[in-house]
Length: 238
Image (cartoon, rainbow, N blue to C red; front, side):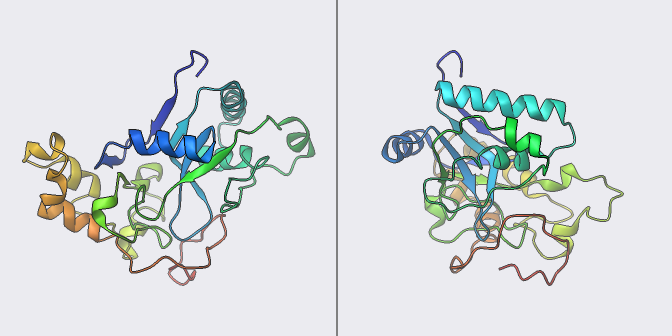
């Protein structure tokens, strides 16, 4: 960013179905923002798995402050910290609720870098997340998806932890299973055209079936509020 080069950060557990470059650059220009971040289908959280950083002084200094804080506070979850540091400037649509990572008055006093103007990448169909949570998925035409985020979250959980495997055991598989993870469905195909031809992924029966496992008939009109979600089946998701 300090070299004047824009950065598009992508989590490892994603699959690019269409080149998003033109769409993202057009959105940046039309919305007149400096940062775009993915969101959630049925809650008002951000998702820091996809972030486009415009190479401006405000963005570079804001990100440096955020990374410095995370370096000094190693047990802070990166997405919660990302959201908390954006709290000083709401997103352009006022569609999200920032997370809170500290009640310390010194944090509120000194950790206030100028936040960039920012907006969400469309979480409904263009940049959706797999239905591995009760608040994720997509609606609309599968052909309109640009980047599909698997949310391969069990990689964050110790295998001996009670939360390990909760998604699949609760029915939120995102098209995967205990025997074949969704990441393997997309990246362990014998047909090499899937990785070289733009239309090939949607022509693959297993890949298309996995995508459609996250399809929902509509998006709820009222979002769940962002915050810790208990691992229970009756939390009233969507």
